[in-house]
Length: 377
Image 1 (cartoon, one colour):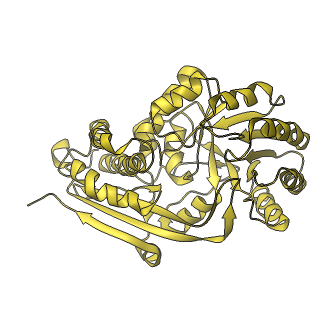
Image 2 (cartoon, one colour):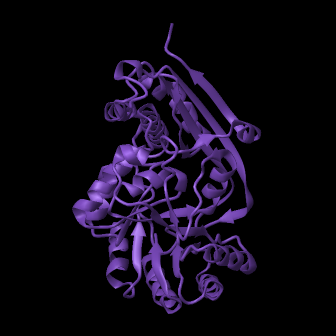
Image 3 (cartoon, helix red, strand yellow):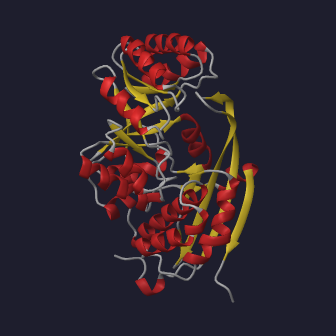
């Protein structure tokens, strides 16, 4: 039974917030260092229901939502997610589609899909259409700032928790990277899958040399061995990497043309997409359709609790990145945050929408932005 009719489902309020949470230890990858992560949340309300969506981005994203996007959805039909997505995308034309603008659209779109499912009294997966009951995950972290003991402890911890595949960061020092990969393989044993992510830190020739060296440790996934903008370089790595080693990239895709160019170039064995960047649930589903057309598998980048439902609605998805930072933030701030069981995430079908809600008391100490919007007058 529907909880609301279309006439009752006008968006009547939008709450925008941002929270900055320090990391639990210094973190770095091949090209960047950071000590905190900001989550931007959006909560639209209609017919007595409140939706929830989010992205991981700078607080400027929250301000853009307040200044531009909230006004677009207020008073509009909460059930009309495709039309609202298109209106938001049109509104950011002169701001530039990549980056902050698309992450702002992503947060609002995810919140609107969640609200729509709640208005219908359905888990989001039921609204999207179920293709599978659960989606595999890989544990992700292994930062270059970690000591060998920290690296081994984190990766072996995921293995002991039943996750049969793990990913670590490389790219700071080629010789040190090879030693760290050796330590990682020793920590997780011979049967677990081992992934590496260079975040575009290497030149083409250095990446080729590393691929050959790391194959000795059973590395089966090499993410961004060169810059994701270097499509020729990615294709070179894909063609010449050792058998059994997938080349992956795409996490910085904000729109379909980006993904189309990567697939047209034959640059990746697996395309990555991130619903918190590529325009929300709507953009992620469209990226999935593109992967289906090209016959290339899709892997969801980070934000595990957000990706579980759309990933289970797509047959082309290989897995979801269970990223240390985001998993920790989601467990800390969100009621209903998902935890892998036997190496996979299963959406909670007993809860409507995405099944997650903000725990305000727990989030309050980290608040850096808050705004509430209602229709004028």
